[in-house]
Image 1: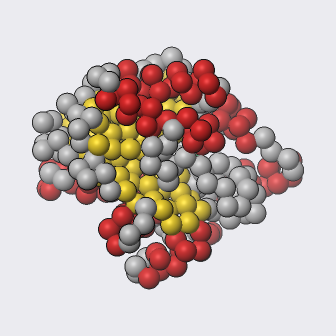
Image 2: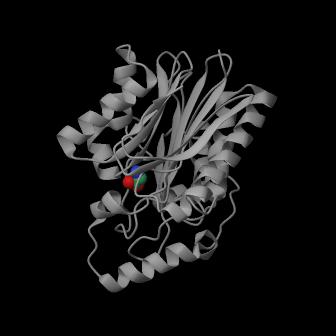
Length: 308
Ligand code: GLY
């Protein structure tokens, strides 16, 4: 089996001034993943390493760089799933921790639960030895300015951000040479969301899913629509029915469009290691590498879908 990694850095109207930073951020994450795969040949460890790099890249809405909610706080969601045993861990509305994906992994490994939220997730993270960081340390000037403008405007229609503005949830799907797969997704959610709002990202079957028998999926886009569609599971069902990776992403997106008028992007690796993606937003940031070859890390325009 060809060990490989596919990543996304969000799917929306990514301004052209930010394309290069998206491409470079994804390339750095892919390089880290390649190194980890070469050292360990372990899809799960490589996926965690890739997602940690993406959370640390300030251009993306995840970890450092997250959007502020309406109360001026950063609340982050993240989830990870192992396709070997379908074990999953997730956190929702987590504050003051630099890398939510690592707390999600700790939930998977050290608790009997799948998803911890809010103060409980924070307390658990601290018990596990994660350092507290102040909100300021997770903020970029870009997001402080966006918050200032939205606060002045008062009432904000969240869905309009997904039609027009950037949203840079990140995700990764990794397969190792044994055919083992892991998928994960992590985000700061949506700009000016209500305090306590949780989207698709920490919910297995919505924001991510992995099953070694069929493939694995990570999703980005308008979380309320993705949740109602169970979007990752729709792509998984298509894989189970024999669809290829890009085809499965396309089938799931068609359902989202037709039934919910939703917008999203999806990355997929199928059980044969073929990569694919599709999106129905103006742009999507997507990258792909095998363990020994960097294939692409690029921002693509509307109407593009792909497979490898
Ligand atoms: N898909 C990211 C969110 O809606 O929170």
